[in-house]
Image 1 (cartoon, rainbow, N blue to C red):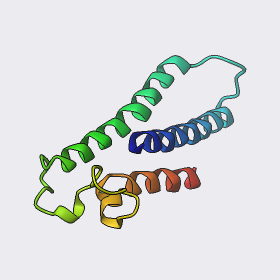
Image 2 (tube, one colour):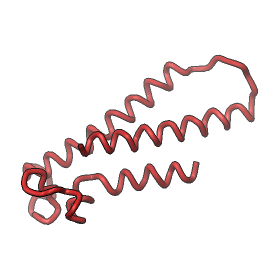
Image 3 (cartoon, rainbow, N blue to C red):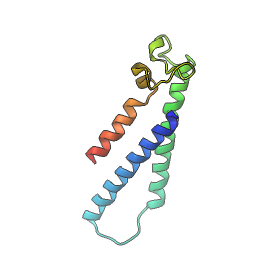
Image 4 (cartoon, rainbow, N blue to C red):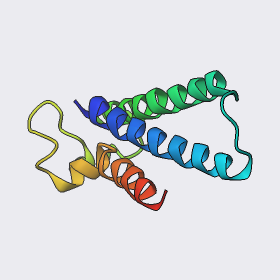
Length: 110
């Protein structure tokens, strides 16, 4: 569930950034078609899938007490015992609130 939400926010950021890039470029040099759309799509896909996967893996290692934050039990996501949405420390430690907030803020700016 965490990966799905983070991927949705990452794709929302990618779409917003792409619209900004396209509009910015079109004001500088108007053209009908062309460009490096396939290469840009590959970069966008790598970001939108790999960044949420890395954050989900980091929160999983935190859950398994393999990460450096393991001595702080209040920062563990607690995926096994309770919903991590209900605990504010777990919500931030599960790497959800900060990335999602950053994506929403960046979408608002662009």
